[in-house]
Length: 129
Image 1: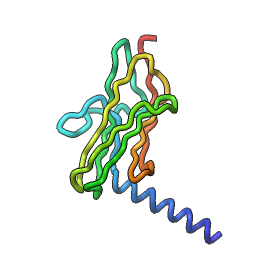
Image 2: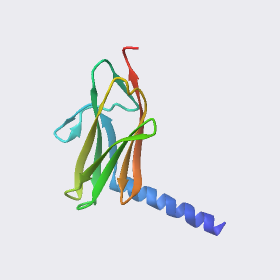
Image 3: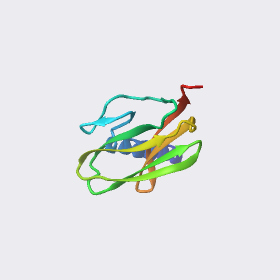
Image 4: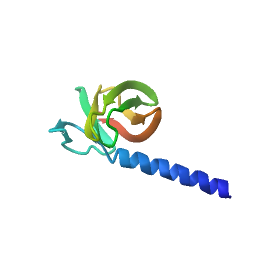
């Protein structure tokens, strides 16, 4: 019982640490002045044209490190984007162009030091069908 409690405490501590290092993530349709313009939440609508979406991160105390954004469609890795962190308070993002025929389940993972520290799941729906 004591070992289980210790493991749970360590997991909670790691999660709290990751949240304090990346206090904000957001899926958005655009970035203006290094800030997201809206919150797409969990659904992106596409029509006949390619749509670009952005995944924004605000970071704390990660100066000199590198984040990796992994974009998955239906479980298949579609893109990996390396993001260098330039100061202790840093805002960064990556983007993905989504084709109209890529409707379905998506996930963006934020990786730091080979571990996933945040992720965001969303659906892409075709508004023309």
